[in-house]
Each structure stands twice: as structure tokens, then as C-alpha cells.
Image (cartoon, rainbow, N blue to C red; front, top):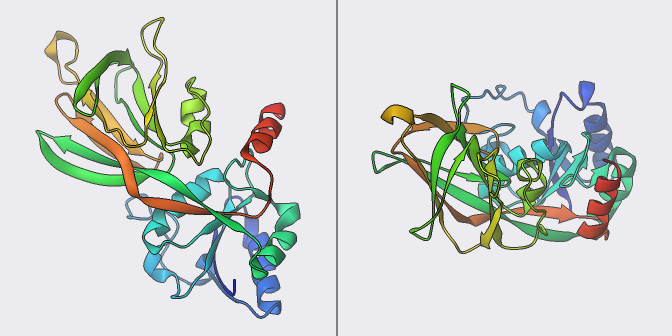
Length: 290
């Protein structure tokens, strides 16, 4: 690889010290490198269509996007750049780092491997979510980790009606519902009691958040299934208010009568792998540390 683009989370890379070291090392080795923070573009905001970078800012011919931060930074960078189909390598400056596999101490070795084309690429499944209001499509977006439908306002459970491929599956009285990819199974879904799924699998995990029942469990579906979540009526037939949130970044207000259709996206996030450490070994180390 000869042409790189760097996205840095400046909250984790204070004064961009690690970013500058990577930039200098690549340039010293005759490689092209562009740093998002050096471009002088307007700072993104929560109302932007992107979190870290507009994909039009990435130079043509870029072969690799280096993402400095944690798993959250990598997830949002993947969303920002998904239409460019450029593989991403996460450099972990955060805590767990299931996705961002390279630690700060291993950056130089990782760069050397990239320059020698010694790596593999893992295409990770993404979800497409479509929000319907009054039976009309309102918003469509994608997620690498999960799409969450959860209550807004008053602290009470909401009636969620779940359909799979158009057939009723179950009704949950809960704080919310998490629909995650295998990549997202180690995120919010795991915290809510969901299973861990191998990241290269093609599956959809449906996990209720604090369900008002003793028997509710996560459900693992095929990656070819479609999940639909309806917001049921509130108590005394009042309108309930909720949100559909994509990867914790984009939140769409919805309410009683609205629904979200979720299915496998045709787009994938391509994650670069440098180490030959298996997912099982990574998982074992992370679990041991917690």
C-alpha cells in the first residue's frame, strides 16, 4: 500500500501526537498520506451527514484509511466512508478495542506490514434500517454495530411488536430493542445480555432491553431475514414516543403506529487485519481483562 488517509479522534489523540508520528513515518518511507485534521475542512457537527469526514475529502486512489481512536471511532469512520469501499485499520487509543486491533505500541510494525502488503481484509456485515411513519418511508440509514429502538421521555416500558419476514414473532414490554450485527454483538447487545457472535458470520441478533418478563431472551436470525419493529399503543391509548438510533450516532424520533424495517445491507465495512490472532483469542484476552 502506498496511499493512506488518516482519521483521528482528537479527544483520544491529544495534540495529534500519534497521528503526526504515523504521518511522518509514512512520508519518510516515500508514501502518500493525507490527515483529516490537517485538511482545514469545517469541523463536523451532530447535524452533519458524517461524523469525522466527508468521503469526498478522501483523495482518489487512497488504498487504506487509518483510524485512530477506539471502536466507536472506527464504527463512525466506517459509516462515513462506506461508499468509497476503502479498507480501514483501527489503531486503538481507547479501552476494549475489539475492532481497533492495533495498540499504540504496535503501530510501527503494523505500518511496515501494510507497506509490504502483508494483511487480510474482513468484509463486515452492515444493517440497513428504514423508518416508516404513517406507512410512508421517512428515513433510511445504515449501521455497522446496531440499530436500537428505545423509549423517549417518561421512564416506562413500551409495547414493541416484532415481526420477522412479515410474520409476527413476539411482543415485548421493554425499554427498547437492539438489532445488531455480529460485529455489534460485543457492544450494546452484549451489555443487555445478548450472545457474542463471530464477526464474520451473517446473522442478525435481536435483544430486548430490560424486558418486563422473566423469560425474554435474545433471538439469533439469519442474515437474510428482515426484522420489523412496531411501536405499540401506550397506556390509556396514549401515543408513545421513541427513537430509532443508528450506531449511537443518528437518532430518528418515532412513535405509536410507526415502525422500523431492518435487514442486511448490500454494503459492507472492510476491516484490515494485521495480526493473525483469532477472534477467539482476542475475545479470551478481553474477557480476562474484565
